[in-house]
Image (cartoon, rainbow, N blue to C red; front, side, top):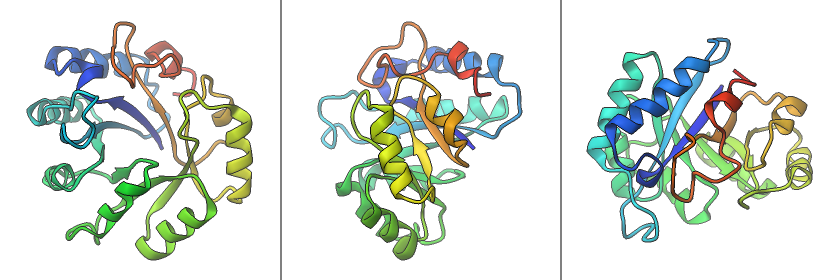
Length: 210
């Protein structure tokens, strides 16, 4: 499975037409060989005050449009309010970022029967996520951008027991490990905001692994 992180309200400018452009750009290069899941970031302004949140109505339109062209949609959530809003949708999984302060969201009521994927950066976190919560895990080096060597050290120490949430600037890790779950950031040429960083992949780049 390939997860493409479409970012927050800043990446898409909270503009539904722009959201559709992002999804259409993906659809144009998608060969259909892999399962691809679109993932946004949901949080309240007070949770991440320096980033413009994705408006819930924009997420709703993004969810419906993606479904109309054959994609499942979910989100990384950073607070209880956003998690509860996401759980109103039929999502393939709930994603938690590599932030220890969001991990307790796994204990929120109604999460017990939900699939979840958690980005982790050490063996202790991986064991806790898998044993206590039954979550899938992806190794993550929370540096923008991160080095391939840092990922190799982490991934190998975890005995290849998880996926990769990739913050490097190439697909070298994907080609080297071929993980069952692979995530990277996605953008268009004119996308803005903290997630539209140089290592975020353009449609033509994503085509390399699709």
